Structure formats: structure tokens, C-alpha cells
Image (cartoon, rainbow, N blue to C red; front, side):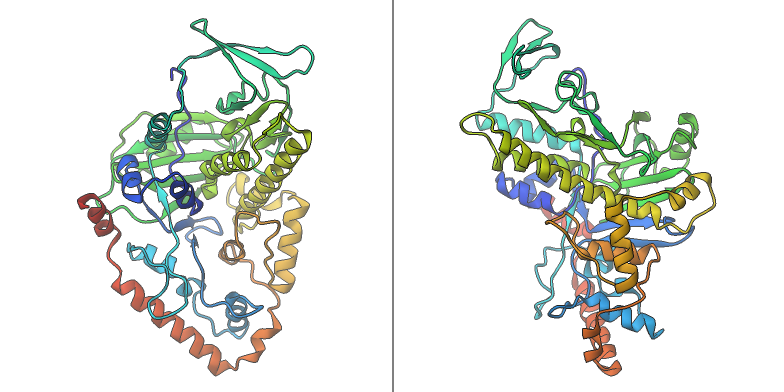
Length: 459
């Protein structure tokens, strides 16, 4: 407890609903305990160019057809210069911009998907809530700062931890949650680290809290700046703010001033700086230590994946938990799945930078000109030439997420799926018109986000 946490993670993605459900946490108690608001997506401002914005909205867009997704139909209209805005067909986007929300599985009287959502919340409060929940279910918590780590001379496995108060904690399996210090996985086991800073040049962040808005918007704002980007995350009781930046192009003092000059309301806390290196441990599970969270690696929180990576690591450990001792095959499988997951997320984050049209600062010129991983280069080439966005190996972000960032950043494919030609121009226009009408009428009937939260409190 005397060390504390980084404590800036305040936004999530939809899988958190499944985790809370698995733990038996009701939405009402979660929202009340964490000061949560609803998140329907992330709006990216100034990423493509100054003054331009688009949203990575959760949920579906339009209506998919057998063997062909909706955006191919939109692409045909785009090539014919008869194109509505892509996000006209996103229920999540339209509801977010109208500040509306309700639980909605389907658009009424249709089979079209309803609203998909996650939360903005106070991560510190969530941690306290989960701690109390765990202890109420029999988990034993021992408070203390680690003084030293004892290893087996033969196997190299960790045998015990010696606490500052003299208490010794023995164990068969240890989970390293010591954050960027990586006390067990790196400082003790020397596992090694793969550095990704040549692809993701930001290495610093400064965070501060400000007063809450009267009408908390149901989406996250990500605002590109000259040497990085700023987040704004609205909670019920405050707004989380931060600036992620490259220290090569911006000093800490200038970063702090830039953040304070762009707060949405009165400052509540002193700015806190975080230094980091983007990348991953060579092994997330090494010997008898499983690293979780920042101890396992770091990706900047551009797509709100930090908390999700904690949750997915814990879920993976539960599914692959050792029974009769630690198996080498089990550890190999755990690490293989971990690498696949984080590398796909890495590529998705790099995508936002590499597709920029900005050349107005050294930072953005570097991002535009930098080399990218072969895996991402293939996805870019495939989408540009054919219009196909392919999801691999159950990766976190679905095709519709990639489509929105591709199109939002200005990459329009040269071709589309030939199935689209089965519809005439009149039928295509009727499809667009019907979908827009359905979405508009649905959003009009939704309650406001503010009223939804008030109803939760009243209940």
C-alpha cells in the first residue's frame, strides 16, 4: 500500500461486462462503487489532420450480408461519389454524439444489433471494490512491502518473499503485479524485454484530474497534439485527463503546461508523471512467475486496452491453471497466446500513427515515415488493394474496428467485394435510406445518458 499504483486507467472496452458478470457483480453496484459512466466508443480528434475527427464506435455498423460486410456496400457508393457518412450507419456513434444511452440488445422490430458499451470508471475505486469482494469470499490478504526474494539454487524458481516486517511468504506459484518495476519477472528472473519504442515513440505521460462536467459524455476523447495525444475521460464525480507524449520532442514541463492549459474544467489534483518503455516481456510466464499488467509489458492506453490485458491474463491463467505441478507445455501455450494477443493490439495502436496525414511537427513526420511491423504492413496492403479487413486468431479487435480506423484515417480501398454488384443503385440507396431512418428514430427514442445514470442512482 505504501508504494501505490499508477492509477490512471479509467476507460475500458466491452469485455469488462463479461468479467463483471462472471464475478457476480451487478451493473448497479459497479457503477455506484466506481463513479462509472457509459462508454460507447473513442473519438479521435486531429489524428488524421488538424480539425478532422472520427470515432472508433463499439458495436456493428450497417447491416452485414452473407459473405459480405456492410462497408463493402458503402465502398461502392463511395467510388460512385454518392456516399453518405460511414458513421451515419453506426447506432453507437449516433447515440454517443446525441449523449443518449439505454440497454438495447436489438434495434426494435429488427434483427439489427443494438448498443454495445463499456465504462469509464475510477480504477482505484474498482481495485478497492474487487479487494473487498475477494476477501469476503475467503481470499487472505497479507499487507507488506517486499524486502527480498528467495530463489531455489537448483531450479531458479522463486521459493519465498521476505517482507519488510520480517514475515516470510512461501509459495508454489507467484503472480507479479509490481507494475513497471517487474520485481519478480525481470529484476529477479531476468526474463528479458522486447522494445517497441521504434514503432510507438511516446515514452511519457502526465495525468491530472479535473472537476466533473454537468453532462458527462458517453465516449472517450483522444485529442492529437504536436508531440503526442491527450485523453479526456468523464466520470460521474470528476474527469480524468492526461497527455501521452514523446520526451524526445516535448519536455516534461512543457507537457504539464500543455495539459493544464487544455483542461475541460477546474483542476483537482497535482499533475503526476509516468515514464515507460513500450514493449513486452519475452515471456509473460517464466519459471513459477506469471506477470500481469504493467509487469508483463506496456502499451499506451490509446484504445483503452491496459485494464483489458490484465483481465485477459487472469482469465488465461484460470483456464490454464496448473494442477499437478507446472508443465512446460502449459507455460509455452500461455506465452504463445499472450504474444498473439498483445502483438495484434500493438499493430492496431500503431495503425493510428502510421496513417496520419499530418506533417506539421517533427513528431508526426516521424510517425508518418517510420517502418511498421510486417504483420501490420500486410493488413494495410490487403485493405488498400481489396477492401478486406481480416481478423486473425481471435484477436481482440473485430473487423469493424479496423474498418473504422482505416476509413477514419483516410485509407479508402481501391476495390470492394463483387457481391455488392448484386444490388442495383436504387436498391443500394434504399438500403442506406432505410438504415439511416431506423438508426435516427431509435436514437430519438433513447433516454439521455444523464437520465440513465440518475435512474441507476435512484434504483
